[in-house]
Length: 206
Image (cartoon, rainbow, N blue to C red; front, side, top):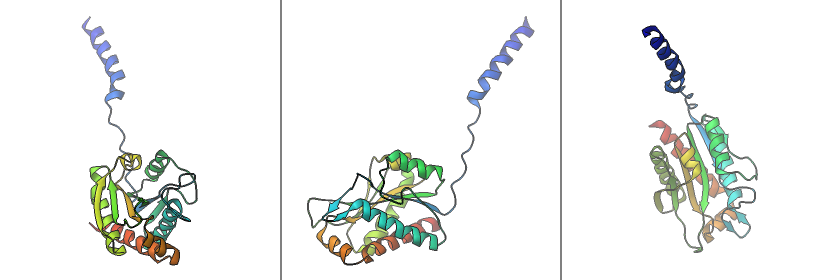
């Protein structure tokens, strides 16, 4: 009777073991790698100022940042490289699958007040805070704009990203002066991309 009882316990334990087995450790992120997410795209234009759309400005800035990062030796991934519609899930799933170290989502703000202009960064998780602070500090300084700090924002991209992530709202696309800067030359976006590179360099140096 005792032997039968012990056999039953062994059988039950063999079924229970998988449920309590340790989950496999996910592979570590790729060192010095950045996933760049150009916000909006496709039918989702984002902010609009006359002939300028945020989706296009975001992508232009993303390509400039990609080139600068690769020149500096980083591994770079981009959620989109053309004018396509992507869901938040498309964006964070892609960055997660690439095992990127950080995620930078590039956006530009909008307001009904055409004189409104400042830099801001958005975060969601505790692990995002340091990156968001570096981003807004560098961008506001480079573009000579007020630093509106960081704000917690319930974005699926930020929430579901496995890595530290931040949304950069570099400037207000709807601002009259920004429209002039953007249509006169590409310097404004180059300045922004340089600032984001500087923020990323500083973040990884810590």
